[in-house]
Image 1: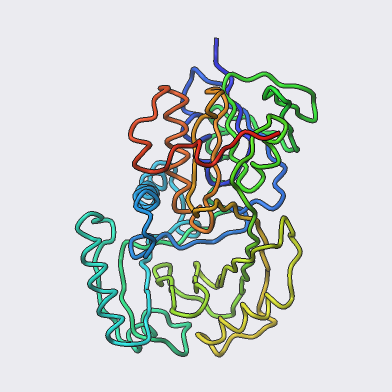
Image 2: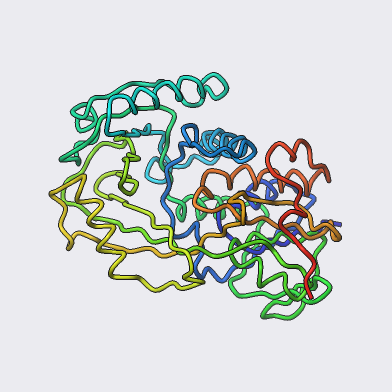
Amino acid sequence: MRKQVTIIGSGIVGAVTAYYLSADPTLTVTMYDDGIGQATKNAAGIISPWLSKRRNQRWYRLAKAGAALYPQIVADTQLGVSVYQQCGTIVTRRTAADVEALYQLAQERRQAAPQIGTITKLSAQAVQDRIPLLTTADPGIFISGGARVDGERFAHHLLKYAEKRNLVRHKGKVRLGDQGQLLTPNGQQQYDTLILAVGAWLKPLLLPMKLVADVRPQKGQLIEFDLPQSWSDDVPVLMPEGERDFIPFTRSKLVVGATHENDQGYDLQVSSLVEKDLFASASQLDRDLQYSQISRVKVGTRAYTRDFAPFFGPLPDNPHILVASGLGSSGLTTGPMIGKLLADYVQTGQQTDWDQYQLPIETYLQPGD
């Protein structure tokens, strides 16, 4: 008899978990999601963790592993370059000394992470030559292993792939009972394993079970431009000093952002002030942009923990319920590896080397009243 695995949440973690589990003929995989405020759906990211200055080595190992997983998934599912492309990343600094320090850091990190690829110093003019949209630029370095990904389309692609194998999806909001019962719009549903990949909504979801998750919501907004000109698929993405990320997608789509807005709760309203701020940042790099060329504003809710680190795995007192949250603004980088590790656990019951990626899950889950 097949075991029933139910996943709540269709973002990056849920989609990758479903992708791996749907290949297992001994499982029936079901997913629920209402799609409201999802961080993945409202994200377009740069996959380039190697130059991060975070001191959290567990996070860095997880981010490295997630970045390394993308090419394998892309090849296995025949994902197109409009969704994911290893186009390289340019990181700029304003002074020659800072560029040199960045270059040395990249060389050092490359020893343990060959996925960085080639590392090249660039003058300001060379940066502009590689990203024709720019009208002004600072010098920096180029790393060929960097990539861009459209979070919404990536998750959608994996879920469609999984549906062709062994995934059934339902749209709707679910709740948990005090003993972990799964309460859906169609009544209580049974499961052998339940995976809660709901990001910032984990805290309210677990409250009926008298568990308090160390998770707070953070609002993020970005803007998309639909421009009259087009460019090649291999134009790099830009992480400029002092400005928002500048991400040219294929053909004529430009993404700029995203913001990090605390104390906004689960607000999903577009802020005109934030939209103007994002446009001003983009205009510092491309003075030819017009406000009227903004085609879309995306708003999502990220999940953060007190120490800005993600956590995942089975509940301390219930190995049949797994959780994942706290991915923050690097969710598109760390999420794939978390999804794979959760899928591996469902199939093997083992948490092999998980301590290299996170603190004990009890760090982030406390008994409530």
